[in-house]
Each structure stands twice: as structure tokens, then as C-alpha cells.
Image (cartoon, rainbow, N blue to C red):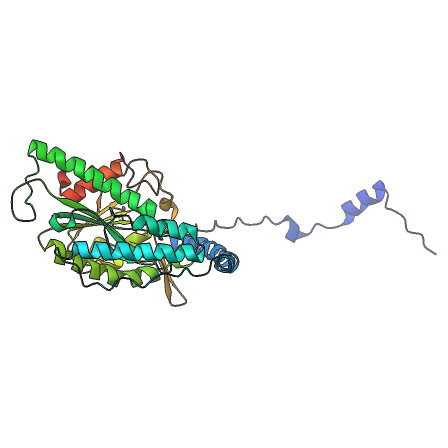
Length: 378
């Protein structure tokens, strides 16, 4: 019987001397060419996949829990009103305040104190709503200023997660703009610098009004709908209709500016074609759904701005068709290739464009007033 033990050092050395080398092992491996960097489209689709997965998981877990914890809040149907005129504005304001108060009572009886408080605040005698609908997420179109005599009107279009519960934040931006417009108006009037024509043709300082237009169901920030143009396509017809009705109040000679924020810029992009406004400002935009100003097919002057600390800069500005749905919003509106008038927005973040004292707010006010030579460019 042969006994096999561990090979000795001498045995290993002898085997190494007698074993022929393997040419395949000694042949140098040729260097592999470096892989090309991923294209913007590939990077976008990779990020999109992660975002969609996170959104779907959230929808599968969070939405059923929140829906079970908070059933649909009862509310009355909106007041049945004809399109407003200067003669019927007060009637519309009164009817919508009454509707908001009834919505508050119904929400309180349902046990939703947050919605009841929001509705009750909107029923205050000082509030002026052209539209109020307390059902679902809620819709509200509020006027700040004297719309009946305004010849300079700003219409604000909000982005995601704007509901009746969060409406106060949106309204605060509209109020800050109206306050700044008033301060600039008085400054112009004191120095006689503006020389604008008033609503009745007289030469005087301009009369301004701001409209906070929550006229569509905004997408949630953590949702698949915020990645597509679906909500914007649904919102475009009511925005177009509202602008037509607004012209019925202020007339064709009034200067109307559309100021659009975040996902609201997608809404404005979808509504821009043939829209009866003079200026459209896109701030904090993920893209307007168009690749250039000319693709918007509007005679309005297009402005764009992005704050230095706005996280929206990290959103890839491309779009792709997935399963019959367009995901992404196209070119960056502040890029030179887009062709907008790019103005300075300061160091603010995504929620700071209407912050009192900000560079962005001052420039937006000057756009509304028509002081375009005083708008600071980026």
C-alpha cells in the first residue's frame, strides 16, 4: 500500500522546475477600452427607475394607510356662477365665501379639523374668491387687490402638493408679490416715472392685482404623476378658460403675466399656445414640456429663472416615452438653447421665489409692471 503525505519543500521545488509554463497564463492581457460614459438619457432612465420604484413602494404602502385613516371629506358642490364681470365680482366673492363656510361646517362635522380650519379661513370677509371647491384636494382661485380696476394682473400657478390644506403657503407668495407691487407702484407714482395708462385710459400709476390660481389637482411630490405631463394636460383647458374669463373682467388692454412655479411650469407650457397673456415666467422649472420657446407657440414673452440653491437643478432635462406615457419635461428653460429671457433669482431655494425681499420677487414684480429694463439678468 502506497502512503501519500504532504509534499516536501524539495518536492515542490522539483515540480516547479519540471512543470512546463502555461503560455495562456504568461500571455499579457490586452487592455480593455474604457466604457463610454452614460448618455444623459441613460442617466435619466436610471434615476427614473429608482424614483419610480420608490414612488410605487410609497403608493403601495402610504396611500392605502392614509386613505384608510382619512376618508374623503364631504363638501358642498361649488356655487353655480356665470363667468365674472366687473359688475358681478362682489356677488362671486360673497357666494364663494358662503360655500367655504359651509365646507368648513361639513368638514368639522366629519371630524377633520385641519380642513375645517382651512375652509373657515377662506370664508373670512376679507377674502375674495372667484372659485372655491372644497371637494377632494380642493380648488380655489383668489384675488388679491382690486381686479375690477386693474391694468396689471399677475396670475400665479402653483406646483406639486398644493391643496386646500397647504394653500396658505401658496397664498403667502401671492400676498408678498401684491405687497411688493404696491410698494413699487407708489414709488413710481411719487416720481412720475412709470407713465402707465390706467384701466380707463388715463395716464397714472398702474393698478395691480394678483390672482392665486389653484385651478387644478396638483400631483404629489412623492408620486408617479409628478413625473409625467398628465396632470398638466388636464389643467391646461381650465387655465385657458380662466384667462379668457379674466379678460372679460380686465379687458384686452390690461397687461396679464402668468407666473408659474415648479410643476406649474409644465401646466403653463401645456396651456401656452394661443393663451391671451403678455408674459410667462417659469421659475424653479423641471422643464416646460417643450424644447424651446418657439415650441411653446405663443406670442407671450417667455422668462425663466432658477435660484442658486434650488434642488430642481438635479432633475435631468430630457423626456422619454414609456408604455405610452411621456416621462420627463424636456429642455431646461434657463439654458441658452431654450431661448427664454433668463433673469436673476438670487441664492434662494425651490420655495423662495416669492420670498419677501428676494431678488426673484423683485424681478417678478418688475416683469408684471412692465419694467423690463430694470429686470436683473442672470
